[in-house]
Image (cartoon, rainbow, N blue to C red; front, side, top):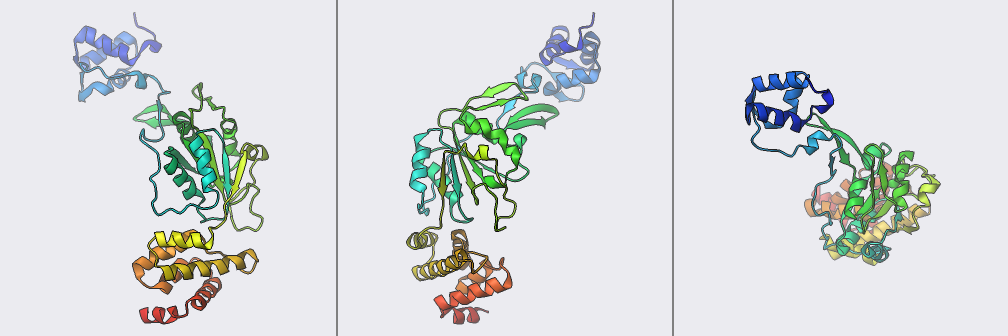
Length: 358
């Protein structure tokens, strides 16, 4: 009498073949199992595929772990099971709210932090280095308008013909007690609201597999943004969105990240291999442009990150104005020229150096 299809398990098929044909089986065993279980031979072949050694031959002597193949809900981490503590950057210079952020992260308390500030002023790097200093694992998620629950929490994936569940980075951070960095959070849509319970420190219920994940000790959340979650009125940060007020309210503290002070910014450039004279000129140049930007005189600004790019370009080209020009070519022609003219006023001798290099 044939058994119902629900009894056609991997281990059941394997054991039937061993009991009747031994551990080395061929197509005859598959056909017999097909008749016994009342299913197609293809189904039997699929159940035995992990033991297949060649065409129409299976070696059942080595017992494999079959549980993951039996379950379509086999949970596999979205990130590798390795140490995710960021490397310490010896050239990093702390400033602003770094010490306060480091205290929060090192405390291992659940205390979500929202960091806002203009682009290129070290928000993300500060979080990474705070984790490196405190020896805390960090899992970073770059948020876009397309980011949804499947990207964050997890979902089913097709692996070798089997549908299996994969944890998303949020669940991975929950289980590891890591710091979860939601980078550029203000680019998100309302799909980010799936994180509401997580931002309350209550974990998350994985409704697709009926499993509740509690946050491990040390888990917390840090979000970075160019705005305060209210959108960009001046249109500077295209793509940023107005975030749900209830979502923002779940961040108990907000740090405003400004550009570093001139002395600090000079140290940053020196630590990145810049000579003292060039570093001093670049910081003065950027400072004038920023003041003009904040006064509404120009639409572009020179960030700390762009200054580091200029230093790196100079190390390659060995020509200061060429390095600056290549790094500000992204601006419109009028802005680029006004920035170059300003730099020559800071360091007039560079006009000759640039002309000689052409």
